[in-house]
Length: 134
Length: 134
Image 1 (cartoon, helix red, strand yellow):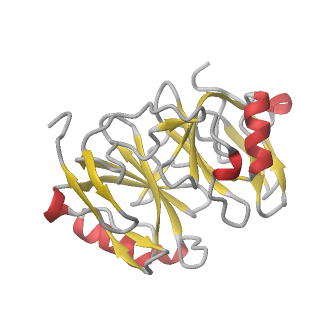
Image 2 (cartoon, chains in turn green, brown):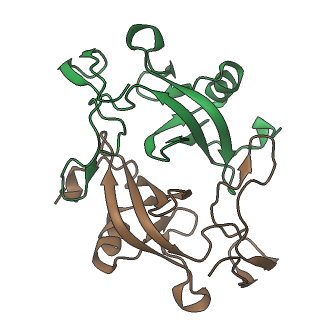
């Protein structure tokens, strides 16, 4: 097991890239601190660190049935980022898409929408989950 | 075309995740500034910003035949990271692996080695490229 003390945190954080283990789609990118990493390993559910809110966060499992079950964690050569291979249940993106990378450089939507957004504010939104695929 | 001024740079940088367009393997993660992004779009070859050396860098095309040809660029919902879908020629990782994420959390090597390293120092290395696959 890699010693979490040997990771190269910057301001206490490392980059966490989330990839769907089955489809290989890159779903999102966020930050983890040591606590988020430990919680992720301990629970098998991806936890992150919110820099704006200064607290741990994870997808709302209970309220919206969305989560990222960890299948494998990989470390990069520089020890400053991790790749989380997950089984994703529901959408990753707060905008309703499976992946946060749903637009190309031309601004066209190229990602798949998995739920419709009814209302959205910066930190709180109500979504009616109408999965395109179960 | 997305206006590069609208991206949310942090200290002038955004995160760039590099994914092989064909195999879908996540190859590496680095930083780009606006200049790196513009050079990438202009040349079709991935350019990054080295924070330690404070200059643009790209894989050594001439010396080692390694490069990342851009196939598509995607932007995330928060406008602070990009996903580069590339055709990778040669290895991505300075340690000789196809992907920088070649180890799992247990420390086991799970990635594919594509060239052997003869000598390695922090910023300068000589590699004899013996591709496992052409």
